[in-house]
Structure formats: C-alpha cells, structure tokens
Length: 261
Length: 261
DNA sequence: GCAAAGTGTTGCATATAGCGCAACTATGTT
DNA sequence: AACATAGTTGCGCTATATGCAACACTTTGC
Image (tube, protein in one colour):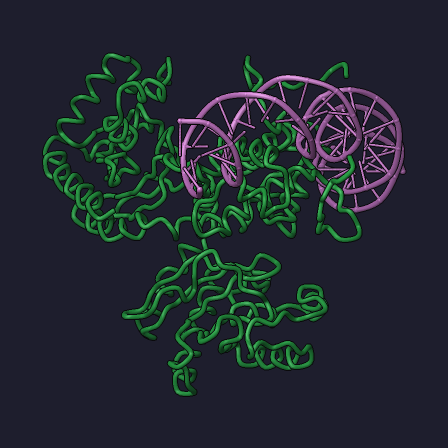
C-alpha cells in the first residue's frame, strides 16, 4: 500500500458511508457526462482509478441495466434501467402531467421554447420542454442542472426561500460562468427581493452565453417552491417589450399550476 | 457470524463483482417498486437486510440525488438525479424524438393508446406513450418492463432475432402471468414464425388481464431490433376488424421509423 | 511478418471498508 | 408515564473490494 494515488476529493471531514457505492455512482455520472460511448480504460483514467475496479463495477452496473455496452465497440453508455426508473418516478409526479398544457400554451404564445424545471434542493433540473414554432433547440436541454444563483429558474425559486436557507444553498462564492454572471452577494440579495415583488425572474447570458430566460416559481400547498417554468430565447430576441408581454403570462401559468397542486 | 440471514437469491454460482453495489442497486429498485414513499425500516424488512446498512446506503444515495426524502415524513422516493441522467440519455436517443409524430398519429387514428418500448436485451421497456382520445390510462405504464414471450412488443422483437438468441433470452420456462399466457415452447416458436410473416404481433390478456395490444418492431441499420411501437386497448375493444384496420398502420409506422434511423 | 502498444478480464493475497451489534435520540401510541 | 417504532452512529471483526500481475485479444507500426 505504498502509492494509493487516491486524489480523494472528499476534502477534510471524511464523510461516513459506503465509499465503494460512492465511486460507483461517480462512475455512472462520468459515463453520463461523456458525449459518446466510453471504454473501460478511458473511464479509469478520468476517475483516477484502477482499470480492474472499473471493469468489475461496470460489470455489475451492466448486469442491472444501469449501463449498457455497444454491441460492436464494447464501449459503455447509460442503460435503459435508468430510463425505466426515471419514467416510473416521473409518472408519479403529477406536476409533469399538469405542466404540459401550460408549456404548450406558453410556447405557442411566445413563439419561443418553454420548459419545466424541478427543484432538487440545490438547483433546478430541466425535465420537460416544448419547442416553440421555429425556435432553436439546445436551449433548455432536458436533464441539465441550472445553478441557483445565475439562472432564471434557479433564482425564481431562491426568491421563495427564507434567507438563511438561501445562504446555505449558495454558499460562500458565486461561481462565474460568463461575463454577466451575478457574483456579488449583495447584488444577489437585492435581486431576490425584486423577484419576490415582481413574481418572476429574468436572466440574460448569465449561465449560457446568448441565452435569455424569464421564469416563475411553482409552489406546493405549503408555499414551498418545487419547480419553475420558464420561457427561453436567444439573447438578441429579448427586449423590454418582450418582457412586458411574456412575464404576466408566465406568472399567471405558475400561479394556476401552484393552485392545482 | 452465526446467523447471517442472507436469503441470497443469487442461486448457485456466486457471481463475482462488488456485492455491496449490487445491494445498493437492489435497494434503489425496491424504492422504485414501492408505490408510496418508504421508510428505512420498511425497506430493511423488504430486503432482509439490517437497518443500519440500509440507512447508510440511503444516505449515500441521497447525497447523490438518487433518492430523496420527503421533507415532512422522512420517507424515501426516487431522486431527481435519476431523471437528470435518464433525460440526458434519452435526449441522445434519436428514436424518441422520431417516434412522437407516429405515436400521435396512431393514437388519433386508433382512438386508443399508442406507445414506444425500447429493447434492452431481455425485454421491452415502455418509454413513451400517447393517450388516445378518451382512452384509459394505466395501460402502457411508462417504465414498465414487458417480458419477451407474452407481450406484443416483446414478441414482435423476438421474432426478428435468430432462434438461438431467442432460446437464450426466454430460458427454460415461460413464466405464466394470466390464464392466457403462452407457456409452451413449441407454440411460441410457431407464433414467432407467424409474426415474422405478418410483420406484427397481437397479444390479448397474456401479461395484464383485459389488455390487448398490437405491436411491430423497429430495426436499426443493421436490421437488429431496437424497439417496438404498439397500440393497446381494453381487451373488449379488440376484434378481427380492429386488427385488420390497425395492424397495417402500425407496421407502416414501424417501417418508416426503421428507415429513418 | 513480428513487435509493440492499447484494451479488457480474472485469480490471488492483503488490508480496507462494510457489516452486525448495541446504545442512543427522537416520535408517536397504549 | 411507560412502551413501541423509527432512524442514526460508534465500535470491533471479518467479509469483501482493491491493487497487482498475468493473460487474452485487437490495433498500430515498421
């Protein structure tokens, strides 16, 4: 046990809990993060782990359908079991069904892309989108994680939370993604107050360059935010008129959805 | 180490590979299988495992967003990370996008529920469905696993595979789900030949009682089956006329989809 | 043609890391 | 109040995952 490598990102405290499972999950995420199918060696390199471990872990994941290997190349992709589990879960989530008509209406009226993102306690995950007529795709990519401080959906939700919770979530430093990302805590606080008053949030090129979004939060019966709906567009489509026209529609839709939960 | 319990369903051979990971995955599936949120003790009982292990494993899964706990009750549900991964994956799968218009057309024309199921090497997983006007839901539940021998989608796909592969997949005994399930190997073989000729498969009350489906397989460029599309309905809606009307539509849709892959 | 480099799987021995146990806190039930 | 049920955590033991090395195979180069 001389050179264990172990870049071990788990900083100081050494969280308790099964760490082999932790590595397996990281492995899954790594597979997911890669655009094209990946081989065992490639994965072992990216994770700084021994090939043999990766190979064995993948074998188990594959037996369970969480990853699957390309029949020809032997490389790995995510597996269908994941889809199966996710589908079963989403099916139980009434909010998805509920959102469809609103998203379709929004997409039609705005002629842009509308989307639903679910709050997971740390950020908003895009789960559903409706492309407007002639709108560009790759704007609200399903499955993408929207950071809380610099996306319209994220901030719309933050604005509904008590300030100590907000502090806990955003942490000490606000990560910068573009030249326009909010990175100042005071500015963020003011922005959140403003959102609470207006009922919606606008974000322009803060997370993804050249993309602008308008979002409003959806609340459950206990007034806790659970999701946000948004309309997104190329930044150059955006202007004050557009905002004035779309924002009330989005707010209204979010209100109605909240009421029906 | 006196009483290890370990009902250990892994029969004879003792497959190699990380078994703690295996248990964690089983845990995930158990959470998924339960209709409503489940507690730690309940889970430990269902899996015949000690509470402490389950508790720790769940903690890790939760940190990673694979399960999430209800804020009030503390019980567990599947987490959004699963949705995130699955979405990213499905987004890459052209077949999903491709299928939508066909499914909508089929649902409209048939006035029943149409669905897309993906082949995972062992069975077909429902991933997309379009409810026809006035059709009942809970018919082609998303995420559900369709066994190969007794569902329309499963058999439509089996019929496209070489017979030795089929033998490998179905195994020795054909599990019975209802009084109408095919359980005889010879009958199955004849049925598969017939499907190969007709180009589609019909299944009535073989897997789920009182549900009838008509399905056709979708093939990739190398003529390997990757999915099936189906129209499903309450068994009492089904008759020879319906079959004669719908089957050609389904087969045509499957052909067109195959061509576009 | 044979090296040489790269990829993936498996057996074995070691020590790491997960497990069972039991003590403990926190809720809810008679 | 007492009791039952749910959930978490520290500790010691050993079951188990890991690293290593040898092997099988494919691809690349000269």
